[in-house]
Image (tube, rainbow, N blue to C red; front, side, top):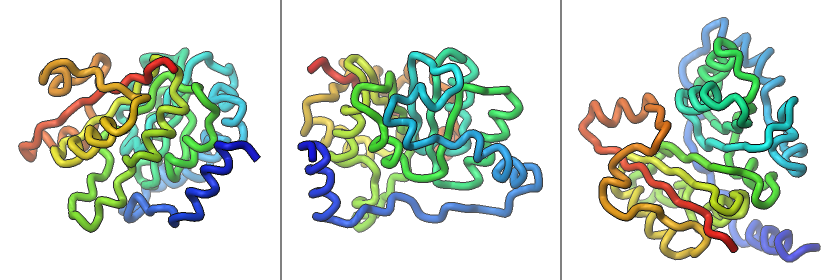
Length: 240
């Protein structure tokens, strides 16, 4: 047994896995949405076993570069990125069935052959990926779990950041967006406790302004309507 396998096993014995999300289904799907879930989703689902050989193995053309979005919501950002960069393979994970249905519609309408997705937990995809296999990881507007007793359900913790750093190649980026000041502080406090991911901001406007190729999500639109100010954070994996 390798050292890495042992540490993961020990970690799983110390504490049960945290539940990161609440309900996984909203209003009833329309007939077309349900049809895509039944017919298209099985063909688009990420093969976790294939990921062990690299994310490119999930795609017919084995693209040389891959990116992951954890919790893609309605898929607006992921679909637009996939359309803009057809040469890149995009992996998306989302537990909410209605969000998966929306992304499937965008995949079908846009003829996006460079997207694979999983209805489930992003940590499963991270665990299945080999070291230094992704160019970028996105975490956009995750559930903030704002009450103090709920904060243990936030996806960002030291274990999560270590896994993100592990799967990113040197120079790869972890990009995080939130409209909740407390969650931004939560993430930055944990970034400061590790040394593999480095915050790229040098001045306030670096995190107040969206990064290049930002595609607005419905969550961001809601935040702005309700008077909250989004923050955009970029962290690069330093060379070993």
